[in-house]
Image (cartoon, rainbow, N blue to C red; front, top):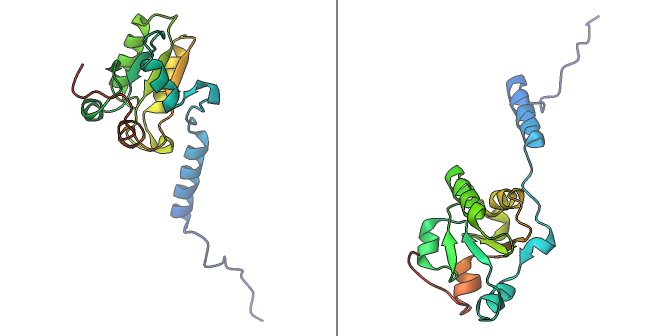
Length: 162
C-alpha cells in the first residue's frame, strides 16, 4: 500500500515570495498614517478669497508649501513660498516662517499641485504647523489643483517671485 503524503496546493506562494509579502504587509501596518485634518482646520477657497479681498479684514499669514515652479506660475497674492511640505528643507523653512509669524493671526497653508488626496505636501506641513503651537492653523482645501480651482475661476492671483 502506497503511503499518502499531503502536498500543499499549487496556489500557495513560494516561501521567499511569501516572506516578502508578509514584510510588506507589516511595513504598511507599522507605517505612520498621514495626518487626518479635522474639518474645522480646512479653509474653503471662497472663504479665503473673501478674506483676502476684504480690505478691512485681518489678513492671514499665507504660506505656499508646494513646489517653486507652481508658486511662480500662479499663486495667491500675499503668500510666501516656504518650499515643499514633503521635503526636509521645506519643513525647516516652514518652521522658521512659523517661528517669526505673529501668533494672533491665522496661518493658512496651501499647495495646489495636484488633487487633495494625492498631494504629498499638505499633511506633513500641517503636522509641523500644528506642532508649532500656532492656535489657528488652516489648510486651504484645493480639491483639484490651484490652476483649475483658483486661477481659472478668476480668484485673485499673482505670478513671479516675491
